[in-house]
Image (cartoon, rainbow, N blue to C red):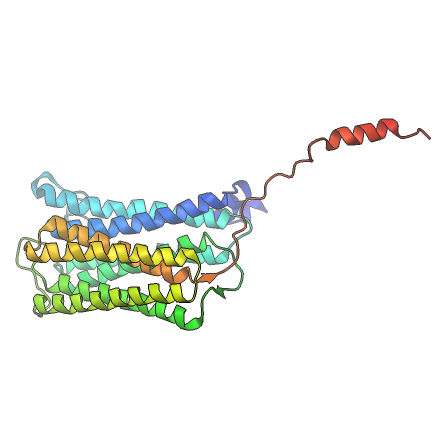
Length: 334
């Protein structure tokens, strides 16, 4: 009975999105995940982390910020509202992936993984406010956002490839080198999060507890890992050339190297200029782009066959109808 079907099944029976639409929906989740990271950084850098004094309301008596809270309340509340936009975008991707025929369960699972990551990170964000911007919880908030970005990139990549068994495009040691690069980039991100937790930008104008470490020493460790990631990137580029890997992953290595170079310049500028907020914001944006490039590169070293695109309508060859008519006319009557 139709009324016994769940809403997603009902939508699937009435709407068949194209493969291109599913890809665009998946890409939209990547874009929104990047925006959430950058705007979350803007909340901290503008000292608006406690712009709303409580959670889930903005104040104990108001869901929205009041005039007395000023710009900080507006910034913090606006970031909360972006979570609703993110939920809508993820929801569109889940619905499109579910309605697409043939159904691809891997895509719908990745969509639901994004949804639960968004929900869990919203709770972590609430705990962040209720804990008075505890630096460990703030760091967890950022890492959860990075996990969301990771799943979004995986969703986008899976939406572009088929469902055959993965086939390596290079030898296994080369793929292992690529995933080692991904691991080093992930460690670089985690260390950068520790630098943030120990550094001077606490997220609020009042005194906020910081991680009891010398942030300059942690910054040096962060720089050391930058050199490791750059070295692995260069090594992978030479390796891919040596094994005559396909052009796409070789191009992606260059894209990753360009992002790392830009990120390195931004990092040195922010350090020697005394950590200006705008430059730190650009550095956070750069970290998301580096992470996306590293993931894409590792995923590009496998092949899962072509994606089943929309089947075009089969048209009769030109002149076929005319040939059939002529044959019918010339055939002797019986």
